Length: 299
Image (tube, rainbow, N blue to C red; front, side, top):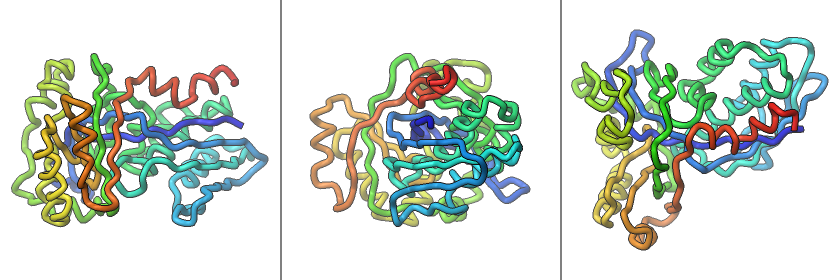
């Protein structure tokens, strides 16, 4: 049995470039892993896939991306191998932190390391893409630019210094499909922002106006969920240096100059809103903390 940690993500920047022919939206987004993680215990078996979640609100069948990821991987390698998986959930569900996608990618990477005879990296990417637009990023971790549906990943060098952030997680979620349906077509960007253009040209994130940019979906989502817009305004007024929505919501993240001011900002937030600090993870730290190095050594 091997144990892996499955880390969440934030979208530090998100721009929408219009609707694609396949019905999805063209995106340019800056992903970063953060130090908030689920845990997966994986044991190889003689056949089949079983998942234990220990929670009534978490499906243990094919509705769960972990099961579909394991089935897709094992079908690709063949040989009658199976997997028994236990998921310990810490990443909040439905907040746009990518927990389900991270779990799927960790399952793929973990099984590849444990079997030692998995599909090629290109095949892993293909399987990940078939599971969801965010899943490919979680095969790479660290900081990366996501293009296309967000599933065309260009890994970037780590930030010079990790970002210290505070997350506000409301008790409700936002439907990604509804968020994109509410996005006005006339606001789509024909050209990349200066930040993304600089990164596409090979510039560093520090020289590309910094890591935290904009989120083109904010206005649309705040229209759907005025209470989230009110939470955003409350955080802005709490002396945060920057406040941003991650992905299509509902998670907001904020940067403060003073940790005491940050802690105080959590007082008086709407009932049910979680408020806690996180930091970004570089790629090497993410790889080590995920448990992949131990699996590579056979530990």
